[in-house]
Length: 92
Image 1 (cartoon, one colour):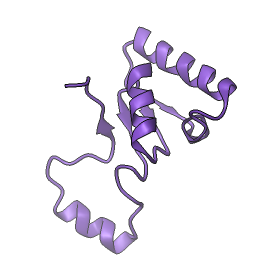
Image 2 (tube, one colour):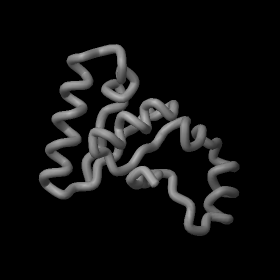
Image 3 (cartoon, one colour):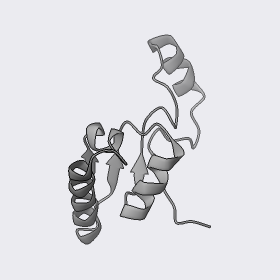
Image 4 (cartoon, one colour):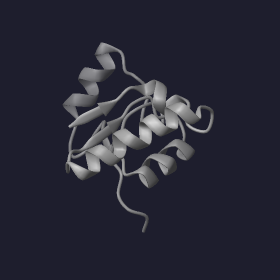
């Protein structure tokens, strides 16, 4: 599994250089058949762009905010098939 640095995701639509780097990372992961996690994903537009580029998983505030230790323990106690690394499927 490869995890992208969040600064590339944060600059989607703002930095051509960062988008080229992000595209290259996504293409490499796809060619190597490696899961790719994008961090700091904060909105649906970022999810859509990442899906188009071939990113397979996301994490960030769009999925859920960070939890305090007590809330994390409560969350884990009720954890079933949820995942903090949401898998991106193809468009239905």
